[in-house]
Amino acid sequence: MTAIPPVDAPGAPAHTGSTATRYLGFVVAGGLALLVALGLFISPPSIEQGDATRIMYIHVPSATTMYYGFGLAGFASAMYLWKKTEFWDLLAGAAAEVGLVFCGLALATGSIWGKPTWGSYWQWDARLTSTLLLFVLFSGYLAVRALQMDTAVRAKRAAFVALFAMIDLPIVHYSVDWWRSLHQEPTLARRDPEIDGMLLFSLMTGMLVFALLFTWLLIHRFRVEFLARRHETKGLADAIATRRAEVHLDQSHRSPDVLDASTGAMETTP
Amino acid sequence: MLTDARLVAGKDLRLEFRSRVTTTQVLPFVVAIVLLFGFAFEPDADLLVEVTPGLFWMTVLFASMLSIQRSFGIESADGVRDGLRLSGMNPSGIFLGKAAAVFVQLIAVEVVLGFTVTILYGAPIDGLGVLIVTALAATAALAGAGTMFGVLAAGLHGRETLLPLLFLPAVAPVLIAASQAHGLALAGDSGSGLRWSALLALFAVVYVSFGALAFGPLLEES
Image (cartoon, rainbow over all chains, first blue to last red; front, side):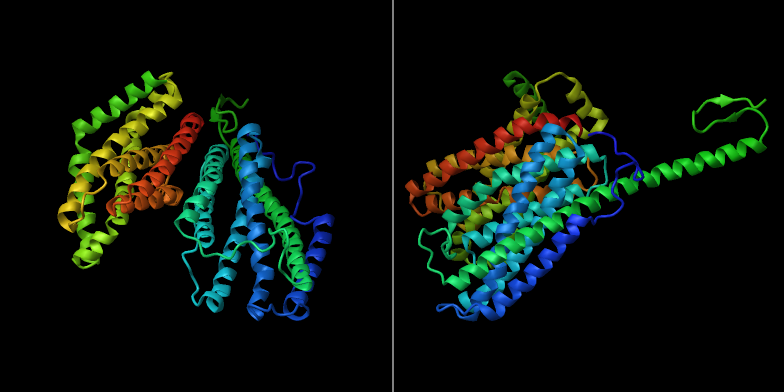
């Protein structure tokens, strides 16, 4: 990994927002308002599940967004191992973190939906169980990223954890699937989806809005981490500069043969 | 690569044989767990026999944590890890050697554990062929994944807590498949049991291959 430049290097962003992200933020806010209106008021209750189906407008988009996050984290980790640049490391971390938030949201909303539908908050169903396992796997990934150590070494180890999780993903999925399965079959994947027009429209709106929300959060999380690293570098650089200034101040009042802290060499004042 | 693997496995097993950590610490530990499970579930014979496959493999998972930590603990003193790095040995060979040493120790643990659950829980020994195939495949998968995570956590602060967090959820599929195969073998359904064992063999190939590829870059900076 290349050395991190100081925070006040030319071209370095000073904050996490930009004109583009501000516009994106407005679009996301509007989209979320539209989704609430569609989900709670405009779309009709479903024939089979009644009002309980409304949580699907959050649950399904959360689950698909979770896959974007974890998929991107896996891809960025592979790219990091290839390119060894800070960009891919930061992208992997940001994507995994945002993905984990949506994974938690998918689990929570699924659980809330399960209570009236299945009669309990949790079922040992294949997809639920493998999603929870995925949540724990990526929690481990973030635990590695949170370690206080050299950023390049940490980035490499984290990248291998993410790659292992990606390889483990199908293994987890199929083993749990063969173990047991109660989850509703995917409704949208069918060639002839049995879903009302307005319900489908609301669901698709949810997917689009959540994808935009994911992008917005990802950009901000990426920039926060980018700035945080530079802040750390700057803190160290400032401390060194202050210490050097103190030494130089000392030298002007001292007798000959003082140690120059900046070079480590002995110097003699004339 | 295989010569290096043999050398490293020989070194680890010789160390283990001389220090007797597996026999004096890991084996009493697994017997203690079997005993504690008995206390937790009441010594109701039927229930214990029913849950024996799950308890057996949970105990193996706990024991594998100890073996893996020990496998990298012996490298931490006196800069042995630096020695390994500088030895010029093939990193994949080092990985295979360390995984093989963990594999041999875990198989020894499983044999003792098998006898213990048979005696204490009254679990039957049916479908011995399937049980052996299952044990070999599941242990290879655990040793492969464990050695990979072992080197990943080596030398880190908090490695004792990080290793279980990374390793245990990652090998959940092994626990599922091994418990299923074990349960089916005990129930006399060897055909279905073997299907799970075949799945375990696939997991072992995937984990060992990934570990062999990742070990070099991870050892470089551990």
